[in-house]
Image (cartoon, rainbow, N blue to C red; front, side, top):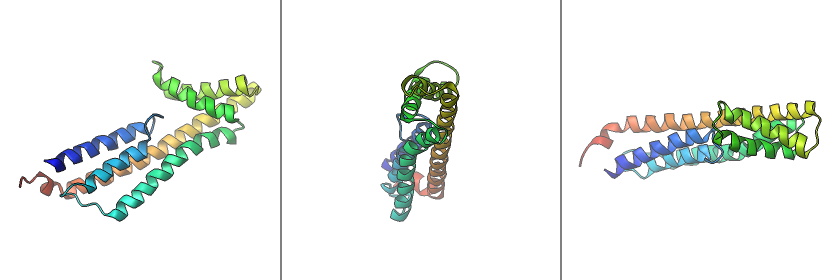
Length: 170
């Protein structure tokens, strides 16, 4: 019974990690990785330490890149630190605001406001930096989602391969 609860909780964490790929409040890949880790504590679904270490390293690298990629996109397109901070604030506002595509509009407007309002950039530079911030956010989110999706595939594969043992009642 405990094994089934661990598997269900692991699945929930992996799905939350996938959602966290797009929400800045949830670190997607690390949350999904904890779902994989829970399989290690079951008696019926074997998970090697090597597998956990490799997937854990992938989760950590993605967690770090999540902070580097959007800022790098902003910088690459001529933005400043104010634009990068505006991107993050805009993302949070965009998620909370009840507007369609807020998750894309928020970072763009945040970077734009950050560049024009705090960096005193001209409008052409500000729009270019804002575009870079959105592209960086999209690239980072896509990469995190792919990692979490691969964790889900590994998770489901492990559970299916050992599903009959999991469902047997001792």
